[in-house]
Length: 377
Image (cartoon, rainbow, N blue to C red; front, side, top):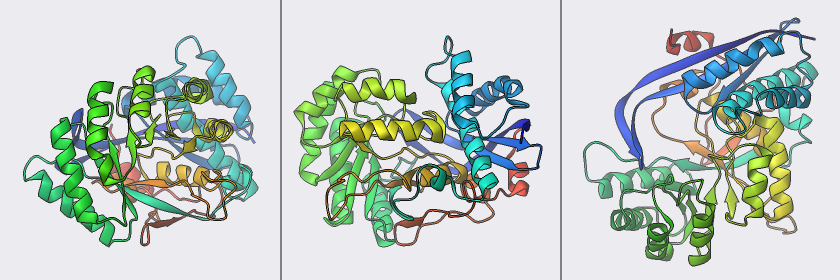
C-alpha cells in the first residue's frame, strides 16, 4: 500500500454571537482537515490545531515527501518529517501540521487492519470516557454573573460532572465569576478555571488564593507557557493543581516540562503536539513522572475522535487504586457549526459520558457535503 495523495481542507463558519477568552474574541470558527489517500482506495482523516491557513501551507509543503510512501510506517514517516524540518520547526505550526498528517495515517492504519486505532495503540483500558464541559466564555452583552451561572447550571443539569470556566479578565472579576459559577452548580460538580496565559505569577497566585475555597479541580495556564519558573512559583504557592501544556510540542518539549516539576496535569493537544504517534509517547513519559494527562481538545469531530482513541489507552491517574481516577475528555460546548456537521454520525455525550468509537481507524465517517459547504476557496 502506498500514499497517492495528500489534500488539505481549510474550513470556516461564522458564529451567531461572538465570544471571548482572556486574550481574544471569536466571531468565526475555523478548522484545517487533512485527507490522505492510498493506492487501494483507503482514505485517512486528520486535523491540525492552529491557524488553518498556516498549517495547510505546512502540510502542502510536506505532501510531496509522502507520495509513494507506505502509510503504515507511522513512526518512520513522523521521524522523517521531523528530521527534515528540525532546523525550522521543533515547535508550533510545523508540529501542528505534522500532527494532522499523523492522525490521518493512523486512521488509514486502523482501516487497513480493520480495528480501531486504540487496538493498535495497545488496547483499550476503557470504552467510555467521562467528559467535562468547556464553555463559560464572555459575551458582548449581559451580566456575566447571570449568564455564566445559568450556562454552568445548564451543563450540570445535562449530566456533566465537571465544567471549566474561562478566567483572565482581572483578578477581582475572576474571583467573583468563580463564586457565581460555584453557587450555580453546587458542590457535587467539579469546577476548573482556565486563564489562557493571562497573568504573571504574582497575579495568578493572588487569584488562586482568592478562589481556592471553591474547591477548584485545576487552574489551567495561569501564566504564559514560556514562564516555567512562573509555573513553579504558582504551583508552590497555592493548593490548587496546576495544569498546562496545550502550547507545548513533542516528547522533547514535554520532557523539559516534566523534569521541571512545574505542572500537576499536562494537556497536550493531539492535533498539535505530534499526533497519536507522539502523544502516546508523551503519555508514557507522564506516567513515569507521576504526572496526570488530560488532553486539550478544541476542534471538529475529527479532533474529538482522535482524542477519544488516545483516551481509551491512557493509564489511570491512580494506577494502584481499586477506585481509579480516570482521564477526562474536554468536550467543547461553544458554538461550532463545523464540529458535528463534519461527521455523518456526530459524537455526543449522554449525561456527561462519551463512548469511544470502535469502528476501524478513528471510527468516524466524513460528510463530504458538509466538507464542501464549509470549505474556504
